[in-house]
Amino acid sequence: MNISFASAGRVAGLIKSGQISALEAADFYIARIEAFDDAINAVVVRDFERARARAKTLDRARKKLAKLPPLYGVPMTVKESYDLAGLPTTWGKESARDNIPAEDALAIQRLKAAGAVVLGKTNVPVMLADWQSFNPLYGTTSNPFDVSRSPGGSSGGSAAALAAGFSALEAGSDIGASLRDPAHYCGVYAHKPTYGICPPRGYSLAGNLAPTDISCIGPMARSAKDLATALGVMAGPEAIDAGWRLDLPKTKIKALRGLRVAMMTDHEICPVESEIAGALRELGKFLKKSGAKVDFAARPAFDAQAAYENYLLLLNAALSARMPDSVLDRMRQTVANTPETDRSAAALSARGNVIEHRLWLRVNEERAKMRAAWAEFFKDFDVLISPVAASAAVAHDHSGNMGERSILVNGKTLNVADQLFWAGYSCNFYLPSTAAPLGMTAEGLPYGMQIIGAPFADYTTIAVAALLEKAWMGFLPPPAYDI
Image (cartoon, rainbow, N blue to C red; front, side, top):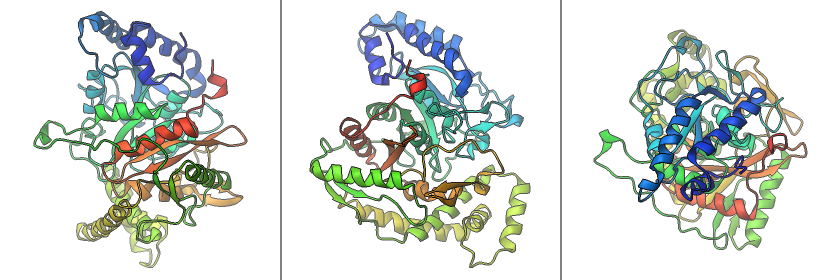
C-alpha cells in the first residue's frame, strides 16, 4: 500500500483498522528516506531501530486498547532543535555536537503519548537563524521540487521531509516565519499557534525554561486536518502551570459562504512577486463568488511601517539571549555610530539586540496598543489572508548572513530580510497563522498563503485552510518523488 503522501489521519485510520501495521508504516517511510534522502538531506538524525521497536510495541498493544489515541502508529519526524532522549540536539552548531539530552521535549512526549512514532530529526540552519537550512554538521537541505533551491528555514528539513513523503507529520517552530516560510516553499501546511499555548520545554539549546518572546512551536503536515489534530496534542499548560486550563474555542466556520475575509495581496514595505499577488486576488474573487464577504482594503487600525519597526525591535530583543558577547559588543558599537533617525532594518536590529529594559517596556506598550487594534479588527472579520514571503523557493545562496543577501522580485532587488514584514505582521502580535498552499509558478514551484486569525482562534484559521484545501488547492507531490 502506497502511503507516501497520505495524511497522518489516514495513516492512523489504516493502522487502527488493521489494514497495515504500525511497523509496516514505519518501514514504508524508512525505505523512502533511505532511497531518496541522499539528494535532499532532510532527515539528518535517524532513529530507525528505536522507531521500529516502538512500532512493534504499538502493534502488540493495538487490540488490547479500548480506544486508540489520535496518532496511533503514525510515523513522524521532528525538527532537529527539539530534544529527543539519546540523540544530539545541536541547532546546527559544531560546538553542540555532544549535547545529548536525557529526556524528550514536552511536545515530543505528548506526541508520543498520542501514538506517534518518531523516525528521526530534520535539518535546520545554525541557531535557527536563516531562511535556508544548512549548517557545518549536517550540510545543506534541498527543496524536493527543485534541488537547486532551498526548502526554506528554519524548519526547512521538516517541510522537505513532508513534501518528499518521508514522514506523515512534523513538528517545527516559528519566530520569524520558520514554520510558515518552509511550508510556503514546499507546498505543505503549517500552523503557528497563538503565542503561549504550546509550551516549549525541551526546546532550548541552553536548557532554558523561560519561553522566548514571540517564539512558538507548532505542527506541519500535508493536510489542514492533521494540523488541528497535532495542535490538540501539543497545546495545553505544562505541569508548572497546572492552575490554568486551555480551552481553545471550537470554530464556527463550516463553509466559505458567510466567511468574513480581509485580503492583503501585497505591500510596498515588502513587495511580492506579481504571480503570487495575482493568485491572492483570484482567491479573493473566488471566495466572493463562493458567498464569502471579501474586503481587499480592510486593515487593523495602525501604521504598517510602525508595526514592522516594532517587530524588528522586539524580535531582536528576544533573540539577543542567544547572541555571544562579542556579537553584542559589535551591536553596541553599531548603535553608537548610527543616527537615531536611521530606521533601516539593520539599525533597528542592532538597537533591538541591546535595548534597555525601560525602552523595551515602551516598545512592548506600543505592541499592546496594536494588539488591541487587531482585536477590534477581528470583530468584523474572521481571518486576514496575506502572502507568506516575496517569492517562491530561492536558489541556494550561503554567502554572508541572511541580512546581506538579496533576491529579485518583479525584476527589482529586494533584501532577503525584508520578508520579515510578512512574518511579523501576525507573530509579533501573538496571533495564530496557518500557512496553506496557494498556487504553483510556471516553473512548477509551490507558493502559499498565510491565514491569520484572532488570538486563540487557531481552529478557525485551520478550518479556513481545510475548506480551501478542498475548494481551491491542496498539497501536490513533487513530481520527482511521486513514486
